[in-house]
Image (tube, rainbow, N blue to C red; front, top):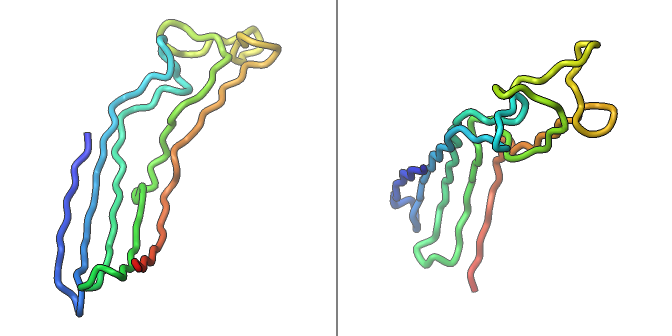
Length: 125
């Protein structure tokens, strides 16, 4: 789910446009069984842009921000650790997670981009 809000105001010999987007992603399970390591609770991402465009629309300058709240979220991953039906790890005699591949249990998570702020300049000819 996503929502967008924006405004356009005349500034100088052009227009200043402000826009923001909030997108929500509900809880995500990486696999068909729960994973205490990789399942991602629901979260929201906030993006915003401030762009000035000349009256002729040939020039523009912008400042943009993505994931402004710097939300840390998992997009995907791999898990080679045995788990109980509720997603909690099964521990071996040494108190460590039991591996399902090789001698060591491995969990790898891939995360979405952190906060990003950047500027743009455009010239149309």
